[in-house]
Image 1 (tube, chains in turn purple, yellow):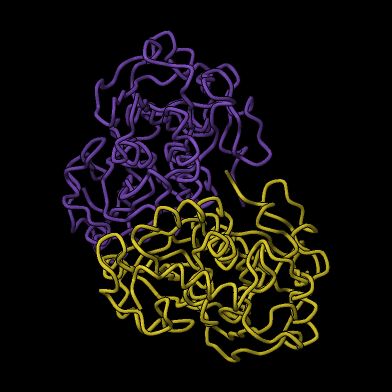
Image 2 (spheres, chains in turn purple, red):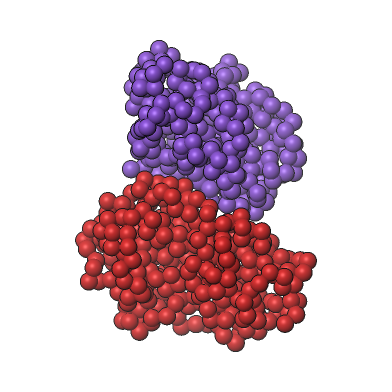
Length: 312
Length: 312
């Protein structure tokens, strides 16, 4: 495929495969949550319930809650804290961290033990259960939930602007990479690094992509780096082997490689802060007790919509 | 001097040279500002008006205000945004960014054109005037002020705990270094890196130093890195040649070098995010028009006190 046709092709693919931000859709944040709660919805949520904010979930023993909250406050690009349990042990009520937005606006009818399509369970820092449907049997009254913004939220806006991510166009999970970029430490959370999600774009579209995603301050915002040089700069070993999600593809659905297009039409990787970051930070901290997270790509979908929290 | 005597010596030096957080002092944030406004107070502010929050000041043409605000929100450790002008062109009223704190609580009687002891003036990205006493002659109705937390704020707490920074003990400015650690970009603010301030501590005191400074989320919080290995990790070329401030000293006032003390008594550099970061980010962005900043070390002292904004 000629590189000049990249976004035209993406646009066509988009209209065939997914509703865009302007299309009517019956999916809402609540409908996805209820469906996940009944174990009917078990797939990843990229592209689900357009304009509803999607979120990462981390659930910790209460003794780590203060350090984790400060970790998020110090590293808001990969760890944008939207809300937390209204109280220790609360799985059905949220306290908002978004100015001007109440906890009940973020998610009113919520069961944080069931409402992600899939979960991960860690015991004493070691992954014990992968992609389970709920965590009710291991939940305790000492657990605290943290709800963290997810970049799926701005993908709808990119798609509406004719810049659908290639992984969305091909029904895949986003590629996510471990980097060498350090997080600012907070208490027990030390030696963690950024995880980034990646979407390839043409060089000439990067400023537009930056402008579209910049207002999404609560869901990772604009990219942190871009270009093929950024791969080494971020300490990513192999762009074809992401640490989470699926391998990156170019607009035609084949493997993403350097050299597609030239000049300002060159297709290059663009990297965003990723909400898997806090989950890996939690793993590296080797916390005692039981820790839960959503399975990467299987997010908590909220009631709050992107237009409610955009910043201009 | 024997390394075991480091903090005992600091304690003695402290009581001779500076009031600590518990001592009565007539200095307040307002008294320092009024004194600076009348050009009576012209020295650096480290240790001045203990417990009153000190701040960095950046003043930009309004067209850059949105990008700069997002830069701060994305990089709160080096750029903790406390407040900004209540409106474009306002130098005497602030809008607070600290939850639960009003603009008038941050600084009620304020003239942001005069109240730092010294200022820097940049024209089209180039430093034009260094260490001037006020900026009234170059102020325009299109300027917007940003007030950013400063690490001087937590030095009082360190001193009260018997951990007075060596530069304070010897009446010097803190050493500050340019690093290779990238900021998350925001709009026109790209390719900027962290500036860090440094205070040497014994290895065995680092956890205590972290605990004391962690609640100061609005004024850089806990260190971002520490140890002699951190010097290379942060891309600092020469610890004896800081890019801002004065060369670092050990507790006896002589040059800081590796190898003072051994084991957990070894004296090592400890690095914090530094409020000079946004000033350098502004310089690197090559902004058009006139930009103002405080002179490094010559801060804006506020009405708000550290106990009002500590987070536990």
